[in-house]
Image 1: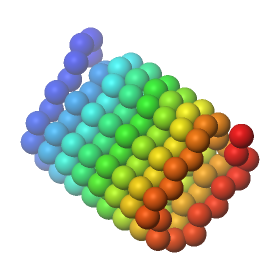
Image 2: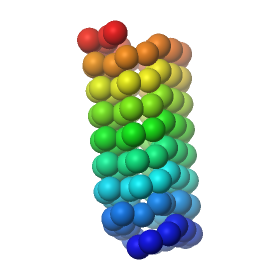
Image 3: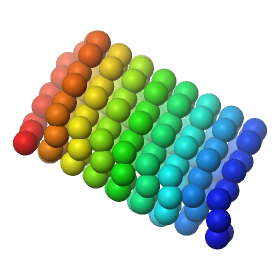
Image 4: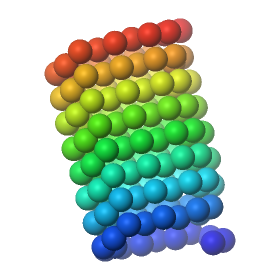
Length: 144
């Protein structure tokens, strides 16, 4: 696909490769690989796996686990009912209202976590860390 893809009210799984993505109201899992451009997901009732993004990632209202790997810009995630695992993020990370555990590995920017109900693990990151309203254990390792 050359150009933008906008999907609204999707029922079922979505698998997209090599596209800039905006998805709203998805009832199923979302799997994205090798995205050049920003990724915006809103109201996803399923898990989210995103790998190799050359742009920002913005997620809002996800019911399921979120896994992001190799994001070259900022990550903003709001309202997740599931675990969040982030690995290799070049920009800043903002997480707000996560109802399960959070694991963040290798972040080159600032990390802001607010309202997390679960354990938090932060490993190998450069930048400031702001934690607010975390219910659970917090583990920090290899902080520059």
